[in-house]
Image 1 (spheres, rainbow, N blue to C red):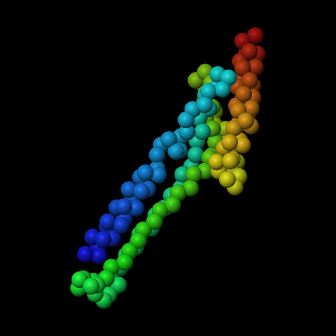
Image 2 (cartoon, rainbow, N blue to C red):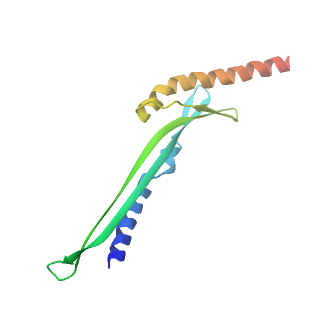
Length: 131
């Protein structure tokens, strides 16, 4: 009996985790800026715990008293941006600050400038090779 209830608690916890974990959470929606496609990338950590026991004694209906519970948690941290221009892909890392969502928003303009600079360097290198 207790094993069945523990199994039910773990099943419910895992279902809740499945609703939290989504590919769109880790790989964000693409952003198009000045011919460059920017894709936000995040890291997700999660964990769960479940436990239960027959406490002993008997309930009003004569069955054993059972107690149990479960829980889950998740953390999402932005780690960088993928930048794509003319089929060339670059990874631009983000140094996270205390509030991960604020870090991504704050880092976007800086990341965009870094991305533009990377592609400008390559364009100049290609021009000098062609000349």
